[in-house]
Amino acid sequence: MNAKPSPAIVAQDAVRRLSRWALLLLCAAYVVPGYVGREPWKSVDIASFGYMLELAGSTHWLDWLHPTLMGAAPDSGALLPYWLGAWAMQLAPSWVAPDFAARIPFALMLAGTLAATWYAVYHLARHPGAQPVAFAFGGEAAPADYARALADGSLLALVATLGLAQFSHETTPALAQLFFGALVFHGLAALPYRPLGAPLSLLAGLPGLALSGAPATALIYGGWSLAALLVAFCRPSHDAAVLRRALLSLTAAVLIDLALTWALNLLRWQIAPWRTHWNEWRSLGRLFLWFTWPVWPLALWTLWRWRRQLLGLRQQRYLGLPLMIASVPLASTIATTAGDRALLLVLPALAALAAFALPTFKRSAASLIDWFTVLFFTGWAIFIWVMWIATLTGFPPQPAANVARLAPGFHQQWQWPGFIAALAGTLAWVALVRWRTGQHRAALWKSLVLPASGATLCWLLLMTLWLPALDYARSYAPQMRQLRQLIGDAPCVEAHGLSSAQVAAARWHGGWSPTPARGPARCPWLLVDIDAQPSLPATVDMRQWRPAGQVRRPTDNHETLLVFKRVGLP
Image (cartoon, rainbow, N blue to C red):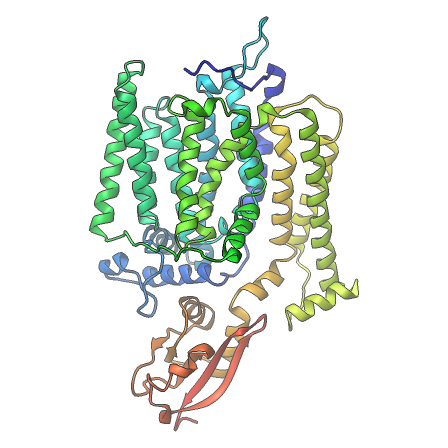
């Protein structure tokens, strides 16, 4: 064990247990909104749903290995997320809407991500090097209570992260990658303590990552972990039985991962061109700053305060493991075209590092976090309420005019369930702020209660008060309703230049199953994306078609569909 003293000086009074019902209620308030009552959003969300619809109606097993939408395969190379959504639709009762049924496994994966992160940090904090300094006359925090307090802090930090909110509530491969990445994190963290649970997490996590569109990440995680275990196996100070069990489980997971990657040809490189302009690096820097806020300042503070322990990362696995887990998605964000969806995988590891900053905080730093959080999230909550009132009543007039300009044709309607949920969340926030800013004993996790609760409040308000407006702005439903008024229940529709998201929208919202437009006209109607119009004459015989109109998305002038009718039809 590293002989350098721990920077954590924590008394038993500071690791008081956070109420389980309060933590579970916070997680439920974060997970459920965004999965209930909304339409599939553009563009990856509804495109993924389109692949699930195709699989749910498929009768041939080969279609499940090569999902397509109007002949196009998904860009991500993922399989398992589409399988899960399709299975959920097939198993759901007839009275459950297919789009809601497809979201159920993804909501469970988000809940599983939160749980896996909590348990990963709990096991890391049990490491002797992570424990606080022992007092001369006793009274230091008990190991289990200290680990529980840090795990609570990591969960709160993860919920507070800005980049998690939208992507974690979409039915996309990115959320599946986040969940299975968190399982790998938990499995590696729990290997010395959980002889059954940790191997199961690895056996599910590494192949799950490969089947969710991140096979390279899974192979890197498995390879690095195997190398670290082999090095540790050569050190006589380690428990040989624990290492042998860990090696067997990790080797089995890596072999399964390799077999799936090879058999299904999952490994696809998407290396991005090297950034040569300052604006590109500045844009990437902005993405890092806002997407991982507020965990990145806490993670940097952890690295600074625990800097002496960084010299022995092999022995101090509570720091080395999160850094290893975080480095892969960070490198992937820089080197590939995945962007923010690749960066999503870094959040559990950054939340773990942020948790180890809590024992080193001074009271002044905690107070600064509290007051900044109160002002920031209270301001956003007031803004959301004011904009909702403006769209409902027309007062104040300026916000109402802004909404009318950004979403022409939208009319807000009163919805009692959403209003009650938003009001309850706001009152809970007021009560929490009053409690947190009052006089009470300190606890490690209290510095992150307000950030997590504020992020949850704003997400809840957006998914209740603003949900009709967001559906109008981010879904294809309004455009497809206008299109349906033009072509009705067409028995057959051809399409040219439509994206996977537009094809899925035409099938889900319009009720048509578009087929690729090639050669002579086969259907009475032809849909063409306006950007693909120049290539249309090379694909179809334009003498057989006449323009019948165009339909644009109300909130986007760049997504317009041109409608053609076959010549000779009334």
